[in-house]
Length: 376
Image 1: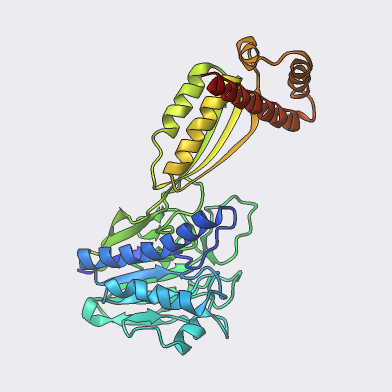
Image 2 (image 1 turned 90 degrees about the horizontal axis):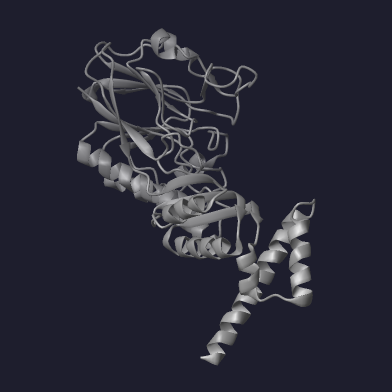
């Protein structure tokens, strides 16, 4: 019986403005590389089709070059690709899809449903009921027509849609593009492949979100995977197996430093990041000058090793010890300045005082090191 690969939310052309240009370009490129890995996986697993449940592109305005590169990335799998537009690339009168057709880049084995229809693959044993978005947002359930849709006898019924299954979000959130939570049961679907939720999520045994194949958020929600779906027979629950295809791991660390062992553990963790890590680090608590120097060194080394490391130290209070101050040899006026900056950390201008204290300590430390170098 058929075996398919379910994926969604590729968002090719996505921009990463919060990152440094070098990192942003690499993370954008990773989305195309993920498509190449999906094609390789589909070929290796000998699936009968790859279903892409919307948001193939991140925006209608992606360049022609990006459109061409996307379809080139899909060349590793020559079986059917079945795609629908989502809210980011809706099938408007003039859209990224109409440009793709004018560019003549759509291979014959790539089926893009720009309107609700039944795509029948009798030789493969299934029919796909599609619910593409023809506008960015709608408050109608575009999968409702599945219930009465007719498919050939003996064919598996597979739904393909992009939107929000009702009841998964908080009650006070009016989500656009709604999908009934029991649509698979109502429409007698053997499987319902969904997009829009960027993490991996099973709604019921026949209804799944695959999530985005390349993570782009600091959420531990199973992103970076696709779903290998084995369909044993009509009316038989599918066997769903997640497969990892993502290149980068997006991690968010919240670390509070209260005692020296907290800092030691953080430095040890930073020593374990690798080239596949995108890290958002938030450090709070307190630290002495010696510890701050060690932390800065560890962050600098980790930034050179991982894909991206952004850190927020605004909540970290600098508390020099007497040994720290003695080592800086800050006497007279400089000693008075350091004492005043230590006091100001406790007030409203604490961020500025903390930064000034760190800079001053660094300058004094560098000057002392230079003096010692001259003496030797």
